[in-house]
Amino acid sequence: METKQLIVGTANNLLIERGFNAFSYKNISEQIGIKTSSIHYHFPSKTDLGIALIKSHHEILKKTIEKNNEKTPLEKLKKLFLYYERLAIAHKVCIIGAFTSDINTLEESVRGEILTFANSVVDWANSILEEGQRQNVFKQLFNTQLKAKLLIANLMSLVQLARIEKNNHSFEQMMEMILDDLTIKTE
Image 1: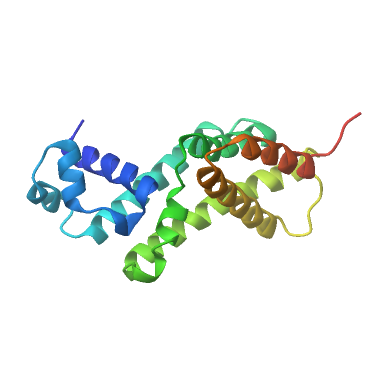
Image 2: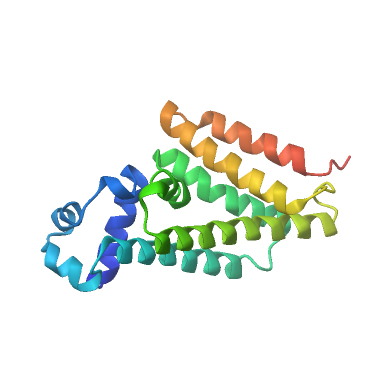
């Protein structure tokens, strides 16, 4: 693995475990066995690293959307749920939640990048809901964009609660409740 990718991967783990302001280049260097100057070579400032972290997640999201493009709306929604479920099982948080906890201390460029990423996640959820409505899989919603935001907010909150409780059983039950709330019952 290339040093730059190793730095981003290590920083990502620290981010979702501790939050953006709770780790330093020294923490990264200790974990991967390089000097902090090597990290500064690739990322002159922590802002640069933060933007790289968000962009790496954005790329993963784009690939996930492309990879699941031909799946049914229900399969796509379950794929979205799976991301949050894995975080809950690992007692970690999503990067939106991790950055948001530090939002008032972030540089404007990082704030803008995390907002763009968050909007992309909501937009994907919205497209899933709209497609599901067109295919009569999901109930007709007054405003799919708002429902998508509510859905993502619920998933983020459930991950946080699972982390606090150290128990992801309620997370699984809540996902079922969300699905039950959205889907049209066929008998």
